[in-house]
Image (cartoon, rainbow, N blue to C red; front, side):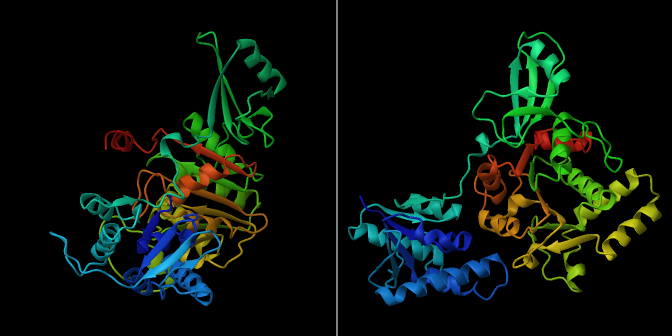
Length: 437
């Protein structure tokens, strides 16, 4: 049976292709949603681009029919712009709010005989209000991933002790399982249950054998892995044949620090890349402090302070004094060897031969992640780090953000590697906060 989907503004701002993703059903765009969309089209960020893209798509349909009556789309469904908005007579709701007017429209269509009316919105509160008034409301879930089943990058296998010994001697372990991902890490354990030595290695790009770790216990810019999963992370970060890496984990697990240390090693010491490009979404924690004065560099400096903190830590660990370390850091920034960039300026670029680190990537939409990864030119490596449980973007959650979406869709590709870090190594206090809070 055909359904009628009423789309909230935030759905098309999240994904401009949303209008075509409801199969052969009827899609309704309230006129007030288009009016709200109009406020975003002049912005130079992702929302502005999406708003313009949606407007152009709807405009391209006009020659084929009437938007007021409904126009057939190539997807098989129809698109209608609903101009007749009912008067709001809902107890407890303010009549001037756009969300309430969209809810009133859904109720009106339902009362006038429309079957299977569903309100699609990424606004949690609107979904709650819709349910209270008897309207079916759903999140836009085309990019949803079950966070509880997210690929961890690590597989534990119980094998006879003699196979572990043979792996140490022959430096490879053949795989018979079909669900192994390329560049996945494997921990071999004795199946007898006795406390015998285990072994760990990485699956090759073809997913056929496990090979020993190439970088082992190496010290990278005076930083050494403190646990097995950090060792796995460095394996991916230092392997220039794996151009896309994701590191997921709570605060203090070393995601950003390890990525920066590996970037400094491969760029400055090995000269495998021309420069390091570091960026992160400009999304505040708590209330925003408003517009900032100064140049572009001065404006983004507060957002990049976590990067400065990690660079200072690496300089200190490398044996440099406070004054010398600060001078080295400023030299690297001023010479362009390390570039701190706002994601706003990445669109449209082609970035070859660079080590690209995108920090706090859990605050990006799947479409934004696609835009960033597609900027990587020949010889570049892209590393995305983040904690899916610490999201500041109001329309994303642990299941719908771009970082987890990328992990789930790239896990079977040999150009990709992922590891989920779990143990906080920042300090005993940070570890306790991550566990209890």
